[in-house]
Amino acid sequence: MNALVKRGVDRITWAGRGMPVLGSIRERWQKERPLEGVRVAACLHVTTETANLLITLKEGGAEVRLCASNPLSTQDDVAAALDEVYGVATFAVRGEDRDTYYEHIHRVLDLKPHVTMDDGADLVNVLHSDRRELLDGVLAGTEETTTGVIRLKAMERDGVLECPIIAVNDARTKHMFDNRYGTGQSTIDGLLRATNLLVAGTTLVVVGYGWCGRGVAARAHGMGARVVVVEVDPLRALEATLDGYWVTDMEEAARMGDVFITTTGNINVIDTPHFALMKDGAMLANSGHFDVEINLKGLAAMARERRKVRENVEEYLLEDGRRLYVLAEGRLLNLAAAEGHPAQVMDMSFANQALCVEWLVTKRPSLERKVYSVPEEIDREIARLKLASMGVRLEKLTPEQEQYLASYSLGT
Ligand SMILES: NC(=O)c1ccc[n+]([C@@H]2O[C@H](COP(=O)([O-])OP(=O)(O)OC[C@H]3O[C@@H](n4cnc5c(N)ncnc54)[C@H](O)[C@@H]3O)[C@@H](O)[C@H]2O)c1
Image (tube, rainbow, N blue to C red; front, side, top):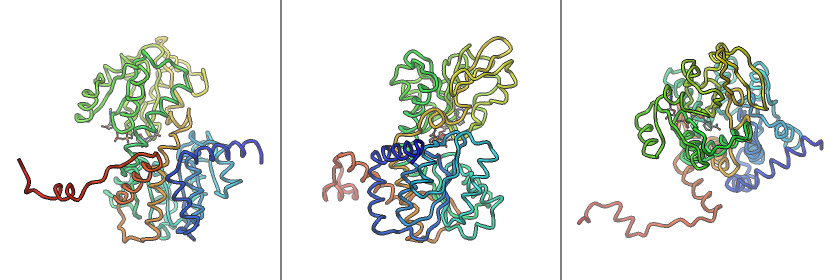
């Protein structure tokens, strides 16, 4: 075993220790083999946690192929170990160009999948455009992230979605934990690894106060940053205000920030007029799914010179002499500059993926070409298993309390 593969195996094993819920599914599947004969095409971030999911699917009997869901998030040691040790054909190289990225999606689809597993809906997009001949064989798919679910719901609305998809992101045991605590912690981790910045005393602007934004804001605040939030949704802006943050529009925030982190899933939320207002030395990063949140083309057009000053830090020298720093090419900071979410939180996200695939292939529910939520019983079961793995005791309703909650006769 070469050093790269060995490192991959060690890291995958380490992550597996933090994923007891997925581990319990794997143990059961080793005996029951519920996915025997099922082909799964997966387009996910190639990380140690993803490796544990794919090994679980394989031990459940599935044939699996994997490609990356982002060109910069692949961990090459994990890809090598999956390929050579765990028998999961993996098509991904960190830093691959756009053509290679799509070529790899095609290689995964060559498997002729029964189930697709996506993070951002790129695989399903290729399936619906260049590889339509495979659609007949697809039973259903799953989608991991907010942006992917938005794209798939748009396809459903336009009547072009050709297979049912389970929106794993909509499970509460996914977005309430993965997006908030996972993205929150690992985005700060990415910021620190890229810059070694002292967060205390820094004015850190979070654009988008959704599940991810809440997490980033809370963790940055915990480390002593002065957190500023920019939101377009009045309820979320109100929530951020009552959570104690300074809430304002992008124009004012642009003048205030030392560090900007976007978590909106939207395009050009930091745009050229904002760059013009920023302090010399401001840092710009994104933790939303695609690298479209910061208008990098616009910034490049304003720059006199660009150069890499550290791993994952690029300096844009503007005409007026100010320097702005873009982290990880505006791609998901937590995955490009750090290791992505901790295993303990991906345990729940990927337990959802695993149990949804099992539900699809064993129950064979009659599903339409729509985006579905994760069945409630799966969501609650994962919460129960996670609590048990953490040794947390759960109170039970007494029969009297159950009856009281179901009745309206008792009052003052
Ligand atoms: N980095 C990761 O590992 C990771 C993990 C999970 C999700 N994601 C991605 O992060 C993004 C956000 O996910 P989420 O679950 O927090 O979504 P969400 O819908 O809960 O939150 C997004 C928020 O952004 C706000 N917003 C939209 N446009 C805006 C604008 N122009 N200015 C300010 N605010 C704006 C929305 O009102 C919303 O409150 C998605 O692209 C998702 O796929 C990344």
